[in-house]
Image (cartoon, rainbow, N blue to C red):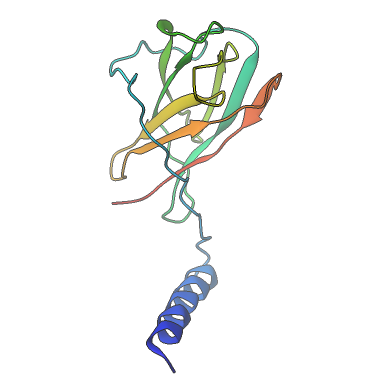
Length: 150
């Protein structure tokens, strides 16, 4: 057996073992760039406009367990394509790790597709920085964030 085949077999065995023990495998959310407009200490709120609703759950790669109290930070361009304080927010996931955020549909930012930035943090986990890419005219999105345990 080659070294690569042996490594693949060990990974498969570990995944099957975790499933056999009743712990589901949860793939971590793919990270994306932070971008130049992140600002810490956004006001705690779950609404920064109307027209685009994002819902989902924050969980851990460790057993897919929900993460109550995880901090979710949002920032995006306003409908005109400018970043402003009115489109920044921070919120905590509820007791089941769920969240609901509503904002204006982001305006076109030069050289980029329509997007929203997100940073999710929780104790004992690596911070997640990613972006969401709504389609033009989309009114809702569902997005689960899965953080990697330290």
